[in-house]
Structures are given as C-alpha cells and as structure tokens.
Image 1 (tube, rainbow, N blue to C red):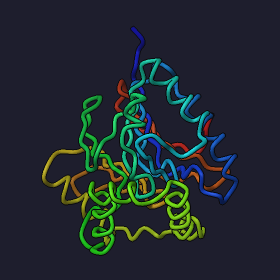
Image 2: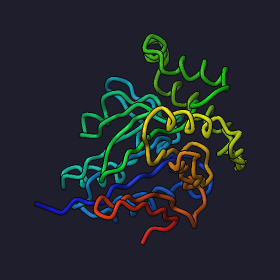
Image 3: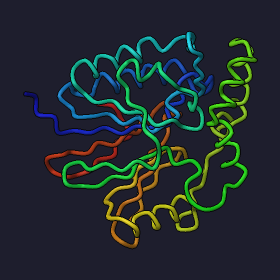
Image 4: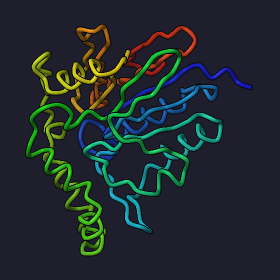
Length: 251
C-alpha cells in the first residue's frame, strides 16, 4: 500500500487563453501533473484551469490531450482528483466525472491530516458583487444552459465564449490588487472561520498571491495564476507533518 501523504492544490492555469505563450503554459501544466508523485493522496484543481470550457452532450472543446492523459495517469495510479468550476470553466457536466474527476462546489470543507480546509475558486464569495452574483447564477442555471446548448451551434457558442474570455482582466494583463481586510473574500473568510473551526481557506481567482492570518489564527491563501512564463504556482500539504508549502516553480 503506497504511503499517500501529499495533497496538491492549483488554480488559474487558463489553458487555451491566447496570451503569454499558451503552448508553453500548457506544457508547464503537463510537467506539473507529471511531477506529482503517483503515491500522492489527492489533487485539487480550484477552477479556471481552462480559460473557456463548454461541453455539449456529445461534444467538448478540442485539444488538451496531454493534459487529460496526465490526469488519467494520476487517477489510474490512485491519486484522487477534484475540480472546482471557476468563472471561466463553469460549463462542465459529465466529461470530467466520466474520467473519474470529482466536481466540487464552493465553499467545500474537508478534513486532512488533522487540519480543516475550506476550498473553492473564490469568485462571488463575501459581501457585495451584486451584478456578478446575478450573472454567476444565470450562467449556472440549468434551464439557461439547456437553452444555450439547444439554440446555439457549437462553433458559434465557442466563438462567443472565447470572445467573452478575451475581454477579461487576465487577457488584458491587468493585475488585480487584493484589498486586504476590506476585500470581500477576506470578510467571507473571517465570517466563515468564526462560525466553524478551520485552519486553511484556499482559493484562486484573483491572479495574485495572498497569505494572510485571520483574527482566529486561520490562514487565508490565494494561489497565483500561471500567466507568468517563469511562475507555476501551486500548494502542497503534507499529511504527515501537517505543513503547507507554496511553490512558484516546478522541480
């Protein structure tokens, strides 16, 4: 029985976004997946792994063969693989789960190595964001999704989706400045950790690195994106030591 004592976390790779060397970014992500030891316990993908993902019942976006092959190698080796829908890859239904990837919803709480984690992509959490939350709810509405699939040919749907994505902040290379204690995500984290014991709250979405200690001692961690060709951000939790490590490079 392998000693499975490492858990990996990664977010915001934005595969398919045609800026900052997309082929190189995909190759780095494949190397990251291949670097995860086959005796690791789990991999949590915290959303926006794909820059745009929409699947029809019998059709999915082309490409990413090496990415899926690397994920399948991990799953077949016994590594548990989990996925959170980000705001760019909301529309995944059965394709991932058919491969053995479990889709989770934020905020998701799990226990590991004597520690409690709250996980998610991070978008829309906390006070404010009214119109974003309305849009998010619309995008996740099953009726709206069925109508979109029924009325739009895949070529048109993918063209619209990719066009929308190219208008995003990350596509324009605009860096987000995390607002510290006034950030809605920070306020969410404080309220959440006040209501229940939690050691780590781990998210993505903001495309910047954040590591803040909350008033009750919990850590709020936001993982940086993969847009910088010199940076490949991920987090590792050691079940044996109970320690967290955050890296910007693939060994």
